[in-house]
Amino acid sequence: MRKEKPTVYPYIPNSVSTVKNQMLKEIEAKSVEDLFEDIPEKLKLKKNMNLPKPLLSEYSLRRHIEGILSKNKTCQEYINFLGAGCWQHYVPAVCDEVNQRGEFLTAYAGEPYDDHGRFQALFEYASMMGELLNMDVVNVPTYDWLQAAATSIRMASRITGRREALVSRTISADKLSKIRDYCKPEIEVKLLDYDSETGQLDINSLKDEISSKTAAVYFENPAYLGFIETRGNEISKITHDHGAICIVGVDPISLGILTPPIEYGADIVCGDIQPLGMHMQFGGGHAGFIATRDEEKYVMEYPSRLFGIAPTSVEGEYGFGDVAYERTSFALREKGKEFVGTATALWGITAGVYLALMGPQGMREIGEGIMQRSHYTMLQVSKIKGVKSPVFQSTHFKEFVVNFDSTGKTVAEINKALLRHKIFGGKDLTKEFPELGNSALYCITEVHTKDDIDKLANALKEAVE
Image (cartoon, rainbow, N blue to C red; front, side, top):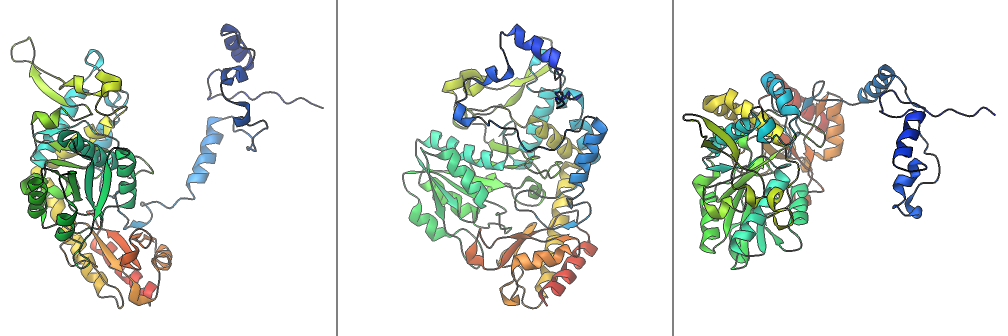
């Protein structure tokens, strides 16, 4: 019987048998298995895996992968009305051009001795975000909004010495899950009710739950369900009257037309910069920001890096670098506020490019355009028999809830029918918010034209009849 030769993969270094044997000899190992001797035998797979034959040329491998990917239907071929935390906004070409530059793309840490403008780029990003938010301090981005919200709550807990956080129940299930994971076991997270007619946070629920144990009150504006919270001043006043910290989660692309949270009492503001020049990606393309006033009690509780500007020894010259580096886990390790590893600094640079390109007028115009489109969509969809749009009687920004209870059709059935028209329908909320019945969360941004919206309305009408 012919013995099968070991496979040599041209795109995997050191896969030639003679090279592998030389390497094993150098480290005094008899086989590759010796490198895994610390793994218990019961955990090792002792048989060959059922894998297809290897593709030994780059061209063959590429063809194979492209064939798999071609089965996907993307937002390039279909009109997309999904949002719920990952939104389809237009990405200017210059954003991709800059974030693909070698001095940014490969700069994993970028310390001063090998920095080629990364520190300044991040400082400029933080400065523009600070201007948009009307706040003094903005961090180098964390992984996403989920982490930014959880870290904001932990910051509030350290500042107040308290171990309880109150969170609006209109938060997404994913975000709530990650906040609870990140805050346990020290911090208890309690939910606040919302008004079933307007979606607004229930003030009586807040008054009933808040106490001397409360470290923070967290709500989002616009909310996850799309409506704009109009009682921010009242919420922050109740929060401050009990010695707690008010944290507001915000979509930064809304701030060209909506009031920054600091104006209605927010102490910490967080969110995701994905709308600012980042493509939608499966599990990526997100970056969380945290912003506060320039007060020591807040600054010293940031676990992530902060970049500042200072004069150098050369008159008229300025340098960029870390602010209060000693408070981070990079400096203190086990004594750090929180452990912070790889951040999403590249996306911070990308958002900086986007903000510089748009400017104040561009941010205002895009906000107005989104809001006009979303309100036109709500109006058109509301004309369909049996469909309620929007569910909440509040002003909305780019997302809104649509209810289909009176149509006799489920959201899943309607979304399946929309696919025949090359439309991705809204996110099914039936499991996440069962009290809303057969409802879906629809998202409208600047990428949607009047024709797109009219096509959605006509396809929905056909689907429910």
